[in-house]
Length: 330
Image (cartoon, rainbow, N blue to C red; front, side):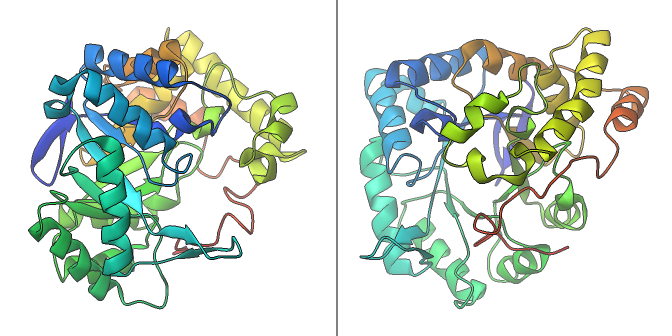
C-alpha cells in the first residue's frame, strides 16, 4: 500500500470511511464492520475515519469493540473522529464549536473507541457565529491535553482554512471530492497543498455512482439521506446513471473495476489527497484498494476526463437542508 502523510505521520494513501458502519447506506452489523477492518489490516490500509454522530456512536462502538478484540491494531490504525453536530431539547440540529462541547464529545468518543487519544480530531461543522481562530485555539488545547494528536476541520472554505492556519497548523481538511464533486479544485485543493494540510476526500466513488453497481433507484426511498439528495432523485438520477455508464465502460476497457479507477483518479489529484471510501462490502472495499495500486498516465487521465468532463453531474450535491453547515466558497 502506498503511503501519504497527515501532520507528518505516514499512513496508507487511502483510508476507510466508517459512516457505513452505522446503517447509513443500508443495514449492517458489527461483524460486517469488523470484516472490513480485517480486510483493511490485510491490505495495509491504516487510516480509519468515523464520527460521534455516525449512528449516534454506533460506528465508534464497532471500532472500539474490534480494538478490544485486536488490541495490537490500535498501534497500526490512525484513527480520526469528529464532533460539533448536536441537537437541542426539541431535536433541532445545531452546531457547537465551544471547547466545552468539543472536549465533552471527544471524551465520549475516546470511551467508545477504547483509547485515551485519537490521532486526528475534526470539527465536523463550523459554528458560523464563533470565530474560527477561537475554535482553532480550542482544538490546540485538546492536543496539549493529549486527547488528540492533531486536528482538522470538515467542509470549510479555503478562506477559513487560511484563518485557522494562521493560529496553528491544521493537519487535515475533510471535504467531498471525486469525479462527481470537483468544487474543491476552486481553491481548497490548492490551499491545502500550500499549507501542508492533507485533503481527506470523502465519498470518492460518488456515493456509488462511480462504481460498477450504483445504488438502484428502488432503494433510494428507503435511505434516509439519499432519499432527499438531488443527484439521486428523478430525473437527475437517470441522467447521472447514463453519464456514469460511459465511465463504467471505460473502466472495463482498462480492465479495472470502476471504483478502483475513481480512487486512482482522486489520488492522482495531489500527493496530499487521501480518499476515504466507505462500504459494507469486503469485495467492494478490495476494489477501492485496487485503486491505490494504479498509477494513471496522462493519457489515462485524459480518457477519464473525456467521458466525465468537469461539470458532468446532474443536480446539486446537497439538498437545501443538507447544505446547512458546509461552507460554500464558489
